[in-house]
Length: 161
Image (cartoon, rainbow, N blue to C red; front, side):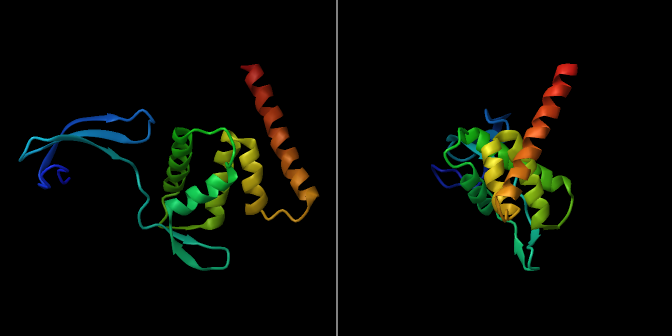
């Protein structure tokens, strides 16, 4: 890590801890040349993952593209920046658990839908309407019915505990 003060390349980590968001690692560093201290943040990144689109095209995974889709679904919804980061990290963790170098965009879509349903129902419906290409109001109503029936089942199992 390059020192921001003297630009020397030799720094040492003097402290590491999980950041308040629970996702990133905060590292306190010290330059070996000028002793300047500074902090860095480290987070997981998906590397070398190829996405196979519905039409067969292949493209490299892009966190920015995932974030853009989620922002559209979550627009004007009550979600904090930390919750948003955590959502993206959880989605990426689920993608990594597949242990594949190549994944279909439909698999990512299903992961996103499952995670969004837990975070915000309105965002879930917005995302699902685009992802599943709702053709008419009946399709939309069926998806809403599935969502509300899952919610009822979830409440019943909570009461039994």
